[in-house]
Length: 527
Image (cartoon, rainbow, N blue to C red):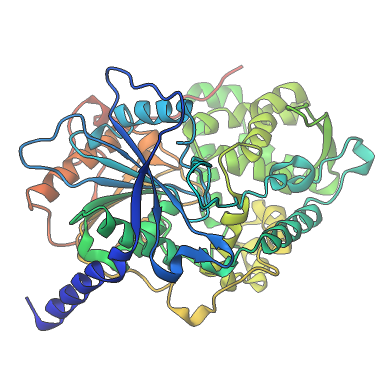
């Protein structure tokens, strides 16, 4: 081992035995009413408290929900546990209720079937409080700012069409109110960022007595996983990163290329599919004409009542329609309804349009399980300083179909008044490591495209990139073949037969079975 590698290993060991060991995990009761089925794993519920000054964020205690699903059986050669890192930032891990635990047990048997024989450690991000027992003090307030999910805030919706508000302005007001609320509680908002969360994980590994683990992150969880590799690479046996969002991607605030690419691919897939092309002819040209009409003359659109929110109206312009399309492109099952939804709006069939596109969009915005205050705090701390409104005109010229959507993003800088680290702080530097890493991307992903995985791979000397055809965001939820690829990758890591250089996997390479024989194609909705 070269001297500098030896020094790095010694430093990692000292950190593991010193600062990282200061954190404490203790077991707690699982949600009342949790029932274990015959095929379920044993669940240990617990709370982790970071050590020293990191246990507080201003006047608020830092406590992380850390639950462990034990392997049903361990092989003779015990496999490293898997630590699961959720997305967002601010996505709840859904372990605060018996129903959430049951969903996790099913998820482990299906999407995460490749974790068989391994303990799976599910970690809530710092700042998330759902699932923390109120009977296990100190009590930690939440950062959810739930009012931000109200369509009257994020969509400017109103009860009469003539009073509809500007969504950029109502969102700005809502964010300012969220900031004021969190400051009044006593949060130190600068304490919530990816670096701090990675330090939490390094301490947690030491507190659990784990020599090394396999890191599995999805979406934002991949950014957190990469930072953990940077800080505590000696404790990471391997990483599986799905829908990669590396720290060097700082132009995401205004970069429309991923959305444009995904939209073009969806339109091309419909054109190549004979039934879709016949049902919705000239779909791309019709979408462009529709966007031009809405930009020139926005139309009032009724939203159906949901829960305690009454019937409301929004202004449907080109930016609003594009944002609905963007959200629907995340998932293959959403993408498959887009041609029919666009066709319906173009023909004036608003009932079908509302059902296929508007209702899922509003439901997604109001979904439980998001901490909006945490999402904004982490995003702004990480790279809010890189927001560049001066790039808007160039982006609009490069992506004319999306011009209205890009312009609205430029008008709504989310980080006004929130803490932002300076550009010079080093966080956006690429992660450099020889930890084995599998980087996965969906070919149709509108937010973390394959290019992001390639950029992350540049600093990872033992990485493999797998692009899943026909998949959107969160590849493992949509591709059986991708699960086979993960199993093969981890088997080669365990056998130490992984190639010592970066490589790109072809679809199905390294995996066997019918799921990998043919690239899946979207099954578009037809009239």
